[in-house]
Length: 361
Ligand SMILES: Cc1ncc(COP(=O)(O)O)c(C=O)c1O
Image 1 (tube, rainbow, N blue to C red):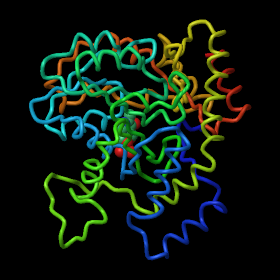
Image 2 (cartoon, rainbow, N blue to C red; image 1 turned 90 degrees about the horizontal axis):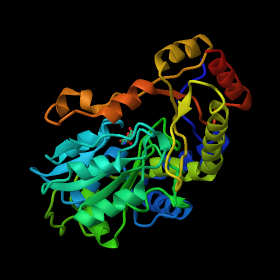
Image 3 (cartoon, rainbow, N blue to C red; image 1 turned 30 degrees about the vertical axis):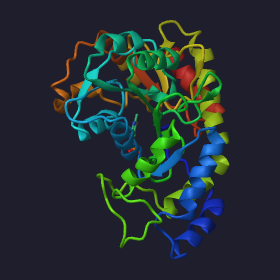
Image 4 (spheres, helix red, strand yellow; image 1 turned 180 degrees about the vertical axis):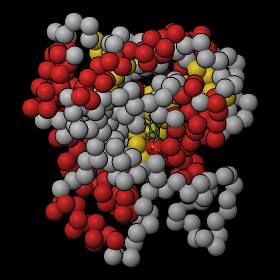
């Protein structure tokens, strides 16, 4: 079966010597490799104020807390995402307010955000779903006009661009995930990006028990809650190795994605996700749309291709039952959605096979 997602690590001969060195170095907690990873990641993707975290979820929790989100506040978010985008809002004791999604892209709809703003709205979380950038310019303008923090969840979108730059540059806070099946797996891990330098000090405290590294442990004074959210040197070493091969990996996702855009446009009854003209997808999941998505999923399985909707709209979970759920855009998108394999493991032959199976289907 051609898989929909796959773990992509650097070649063993590249990764293992550095991994062995760090494992037996006596320095396996947060240290030199973590700070080097932050610096190299920052340069590679043109993003400043980068903090390495234990996961994307930890980074989201930090982003929401640094945005001032606390009990009684509302956060506008999208249900079309992986659950941590929204469970992290509950960590802060805030209410999730669903905005509808644009059925063309599966991304949060700026017009719906506008309708959902109240005096309690503290933040907006946008997700570049499946790697397709949201309409950032419009949403930035809405956030500024209402004095609301904008958080970009870029977990699906490493390598995606908006207006020629990496996603993650426009939000007040942004996060990436390096979980096992993302573009750049590091076993687990994430980064928090703060637009403003002033947030770096509280963010560092937040990721390490409320303390700052470098202050003697016998003198340090904890004044706010912090967590055990730091990255360690072993994970950072995998990340440093990944940064050497990531461009080729991301390009493979993009090449396959563009190929499918071109070929699917010729097949009647099939459509695919599109973002605004400033957005360039990194196609973490290729998003196909069709009124007969369930039948196509079965026929692709018969041809040895794993296709799936992959996510469950988050408003279906009981834990979010307090949040209003009339979301016609989401319903339309989810009914038509089918993700097909698109990553670096999909060869030219594989993608031809997928297109042929779709033509027959
Ligand atoms: C959209 C989205 N946001 C956040 C996360 C959380 O990332 P992590 O698994 O690194 O905690 C994930 C992945 O699981 C995700 O897909």
